[in-house]
Length: 372
Image (cartoon, rainbow, N blue to C red; front, side, top):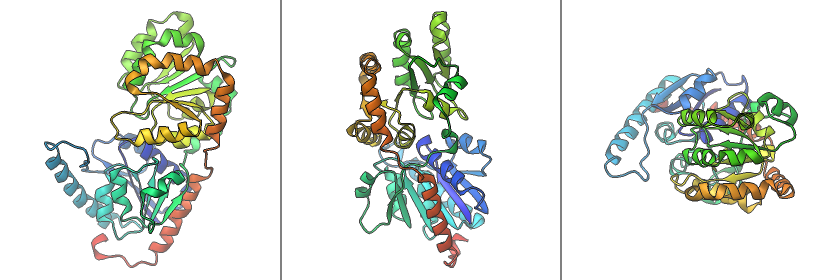
């Protein structure tokens, strides 16, 4: 099997693809990852030593008229670049997990067996376009089915989680991160790029927050200098309760396992990673990402696993919400149990099986001239 993976834009699309590749192990004869020029996915993919190629890509939905002509040109250039890659690499199967970089590859590779995995509950425009060419559409929750025509082959797999997230025990995780065993722990993270409004709401209330809970704060790189400056101004006893990092890679599973509560965005990864750990959440949907994160947050809140706060009023509502939850352990426990019931185990293995089936189908399909 020669597999081409196409994903980019945010960790919500990149990490599921990495988890699927882990489940496939050494089975593919070759793997090539196609991402966007200047995309955040390059660094994540290069850490795994998977071959990576970048192509021009740009979104066309919701952009201003002044940007639309240039983005259309990028889309056309990306389609030509994708066609060249497909002719050279000759993949048996295409895997798409998100990002507008997938659109030109899906167009150029429309005759190659493909799987589109939809991480969010509601697919974005790019994934909707890619799904038109897909042989199989895999989704995280049953709620996603109604976004696709009934004639499409839609499979509910759950959200695939990476192997490095699993296997952590609470005591081991807290020892690894230098946390006290007896005090509660709040995990704060803003996704793969950080979240400025969340970071600043926490920093604004930091001393008060640290009197009631220890904090693991994954800030992202952009706000890291500001966080370092704020940390240095804390009293010594509170500095011991504040554990800030730009990001965690190998130990990210420890952060999830050590926490009693998480404050985060409502990107696609919350649908898989939080249920894996049964971790109750305060969700702050990113207000400029159309409605994808609002839909994800509403799903988790509807099931009693999370509370949703507005990004615009977070600085005022954060402290009262933290006090309410941390002072009612029974409610936190109920939220955690509700979150755990949403987990769908074995998602990565299920998706790997679907790709194997497509590879078997590809072996029976004569290659068209325009994909060689």
